[in-house]
Length: 258
Ligand SMILES: Nc1ncnc2c1ncn2[C@@H]1O[C@H](COP(=O)(O)OP(=O)(O)OP(=O)(O)O)[C@@H](O)[C@H]1O
Ligand SMILES: [Mg+2]
Image 1 (tube, rainbow, N blue to C red):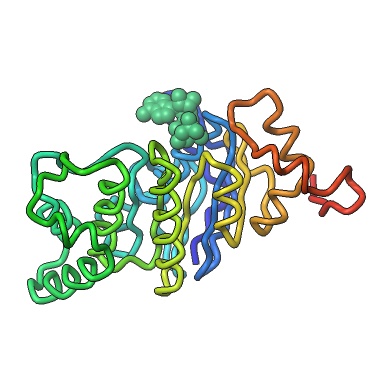
Image 2 (tube, rainbow, N blue to C red):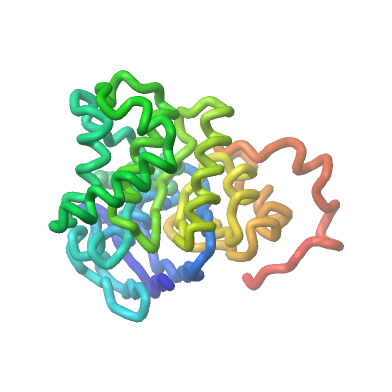
């Protein structure tokens, strides 16, 4: 559905992505993990058009998106929820959600979509007239999801959706990610919580220093012994349960091309 080939991109003088090849399968939940500064958010910015690649190509549903504007990319069905809070805190929940449909001219379509997301997210229904800034972090994330769905995207891009959420709110959020997949959408997300992200995902991608290091199913990546090496001394926490229940040594672990 989405293919990146040889993508080189960065800010100012330096390259952050140094030749990224990535495929996102239609209907998948594809989770990108990797140490801080690996270039995960930069990769998502290239996908949503916020950053133009210096080299390489981005293809979505058979059409080139290389170098296209963020608005063009939104219209083609890719919507991103940013890493940091992105609601307008002084606007109502309703206004924030409606802003997600700013590209839709037909008000009947806007009303229909609004009815759908209100149905899907009880918190949006309950707090429609409240200031978005008065909601908890988890509730605000739900409003961001609702806003993203107003364009009825085929690919939803989420940058660390669990960041700052309490465990209960994070679980609920993961449930909504699964729901997006059941509704026929494809999801590309970055997760700091490696275990939760890869368990949620059908496909996993490990990035390091601006390159894709490993790909496979979420489960294959979780059990890969190279993952431990990658994160040794790093800042990303791999659940200790991995060493208790995971495979021992290389004998029964999947092998990966160099
Ligand atoms: N707007 C920017 N201008 C200049 N450098 C930037 C900018 N955004 C990110 N960088 C740099 O690019 C590198 C990769 O950043 P990126 O945000 O893609 O990493 P990440 O994998 O998402 O990390 P994290 O896990 O901390 O979110 C970092 O060294 C960062 O300092
Ligand atoms: Mg990031």
